Amino acid sequence: MIGRTLGAAGLRVSGLGLGCMGMSDLYGPADEEESIATIRAALDAGITLFDTGDYYGHGHNELLLGAALRGVPRERFVVSVKFGALRDPGGAWLGIDTRPAAVKNAIGYTLKRLALDHIDIYRPGRLDPAVPIEETVGAIAELIRAGYVRYLGLSEVGAETVRRANAVHPVLDLQIEYSLISRGIEATILPAARALGVGITAYGVLSRGLLGGHWARDRALPKGDIRNHLPRFSGDNLGRNLELVETLRMLAQAKGATAAQLAIAWVLARGADIVPLVGARRRDRLTEALGALEIALTSDDIARLESAVPAGAAAGTRYDARQMGILDSER
Ligand SMILES: NC(=O)c1ccc[n+]([C@@H]2O[C@H](COP(=O)([O-])OP(=O)(O)OC[C@H]3O[C@@H](n4cnc5c(N)ncnc54)[C@H](OP(=O)(O)O)[C@@H]3O)[C@@H](O)[C@H]2O)c1
Image (cartoon, helix red, strand yellow):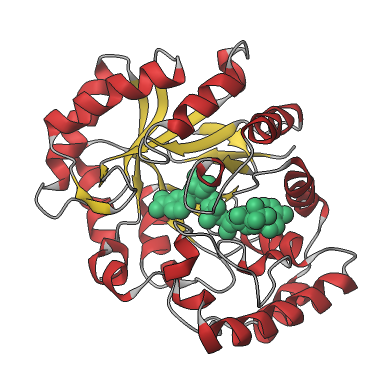
């Protein structure tokens, strides 16, 4: 496993991280035993970075990750946790609460569910429009001083919010969507993060499965699968996007790789400060994702790939219009 360094603080993590969200939420039913086996297999393969959120499955994801990590020496893994999203019992999104009191309340439950005495990276899942980022970060800084958290992270915020947060306490990393077909961070967010020494943990590197090469046009999505509401998976957009995936598959074949591997390898090649989080929910998908580490992309390969799948080539935005309107990273 290759290693990467996150942020100016220099946290060493594996070059690929495992995002656990889909094991509890948003991508239809998952098999709990297989999820735990996947986390264990990731550890065996040298993955050290595991991402979760307290609102993924109302705590289920943290309980699952905690169970999979039980007995594993603490120095072998880094846990990144998001908090703040409010959801009703049916899973509907109600908003975000990152007031200092909410931050300090949430972490107690997280520590219990994960059965850990500290969290490595703690981050608000979204910017709370009602709470200055300085106040939220101040509360996390207090948790850091008290030993409950090691590092501050952010998620889906824009350059100005990163700067404001970093002025209160150093930001280790920004978690944000980044893939061949979601390249919005390149204009201002990525340069700002680099100037401040803030690392990037990239999610959605397969655009939530779209670029994985396993998507079928007629795939039926169960109720509660977020992709029912994502423009890239709907109607004509899906057909056009799957044509891009065919192009990707052909380029991948020439490298002896799969479409998913090439998409992950492209993100890996974007900089040593970027760590892709892969959302594998099963061991076979994890094995495939790990294969991306074996692909050496030349500058010619990258140029060919970016001209076949240019920035902005995807049909549809990465979230629905309501979400796009409230994302700080899209301002
Ligand atoms: N900060 C945020 O706002 C935010 C938002 C979303 C996610 N995240 C984090 O980022 C992680 C990754 O995000 P994501 O799940 O959307 O990313 P992703 O890797 O783009 O998509 C994961 C999906 O890709 C499919 N897939 C196909 N081939 C795969 C392969 N070889 N390896 C892995 N997956 C493959 C899987 O579908 P099948 O299981 O059907 O095969 C899986 O459902 C999440 O788990 C979560 O921790 C953060």
